[in-house]
Image (cartoon, rainbow, N blue to C red):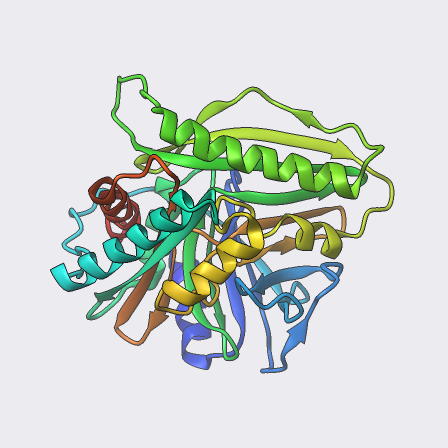
Length: 346
């Protein structure tokens, strides 16, 4: 823990680009850092390093090279006090978000949309923040997520624990997933998924399969059975999808798949237009793409369960899928549950 914290404090003071991360299931933490402030890009997703791209900007892909790297064992988990942080939303913010949900339902009922994902930005005051402790608590809470702490002068500072893998590429083998629908985890109880969540997740499955089949018409696409996947104190419906191909372009594939209906909506163009018109804030890197690009394996994730660090404030970003079966109050409560998954780690 001492070496990990000492390196973080040194890099935080220097303010040059760096990223700490733990990939799903891994038992160590990796650090990539720069000795200078040069800005690197990797739009082809081909250089060794860690990449980050915003939700809407598709050509600017920031990269921190792996040239300077260190590895750390994950420190032993210690007992800690219950978090004192809560989502600082008010009735006005809640009503504004519910009004946007109602507009989305009106568009769905009019046949313009089938689904749209609406996000909320939540500001949390964090006096005397201990960011490395927050990062480690995310690692302990999300063993099957990409957990990261990224700092770059061009993008700002972002931290998160995302369960959604957009693509993993190893040789000619490609893997993705359709992750959607949310329930609170209750120990010892079987989840009871309703039609709304199952329909929401099936939209994602169908969209990914159609996109792949259109781009790779002669390539067999394989799907797992739908199953429940835990992420912290939440549960999601998931279907794993995989295929093999000798020469498909990774940027073209990402462009085809992202944003999936899990973070955008259906139809894609209409949902993105609705988000830009009505959401009321810039998502920036929330629901964008990020991850480590290695020599033999490339892992690209969708940036969920994340926040932007600004001095002594953390701006959380959470979202929920709106379909014809959505209920206004339940959708707001889902956002609050998602914000708690991060707040409980502060």
